[in-house]
Length: 274
Image (cartoon, rainbow, N blue to C red; front, side, top):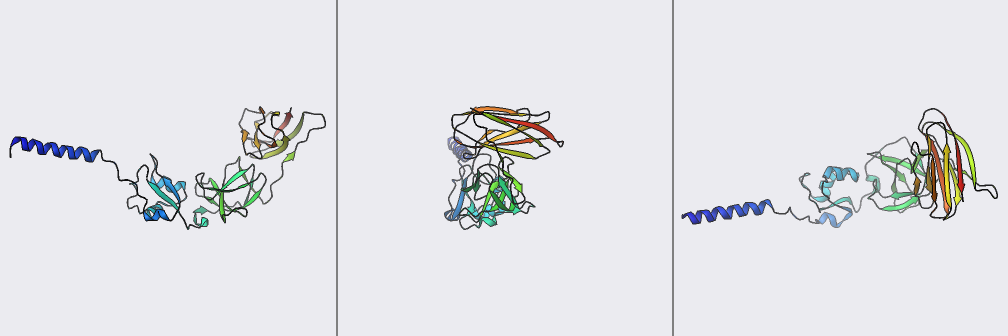
């Protein structure tokens, strides 16, 4: 073999190695199992199969079976995965038992078909509405409900404390604030302790300016929520006992007063609307 032939063979071999090194990973194929899939997810950079399984309340083994994956460590960016079979019973989504039997919606809360914000919205709970709880997601972030007003037999709402609150079957209604004729404001005295919250509600018109102030010697603040739009206009934070703003729409507004101390915290709530 001449030296030129030998060098040519080496060059071809090196080109082959370079081509293999820069080859793209296998294209994600929508296998036959995706044809009957109830919900799909597209893999993003940094995803792992175990993280996707936790996000959708599934096991890694189940996702491998649904998608024909033999190696749990081999998924690719852009790959479409089935995370819920089309014929899945919502009751099959893994949840844990809980001592909570019912929750009340503290504002308008979206009801979803599964334990995560990526699941479809199948309904809503209005402020003050109570729903029966049948379990809690493994990560503790979602109540599983038995919903009567949706197409789903089982559905989920967030456990976030600004959205839902466990109750004994009946949520105390907020105290309605009504101004005296010709007045632009009113005050209420109250007290909270620990995680206790007290709620007030008042009607206001779009374009009006509302000012809410909570005076207290302790650590007391408040949350301001629109009942119809579900918007949180002010979150409960220490050191922020006042809010003022122009209201975007005509609706009821809920003021939820709370504190952080185990001792009783007295307060005075003052609301003005002009």
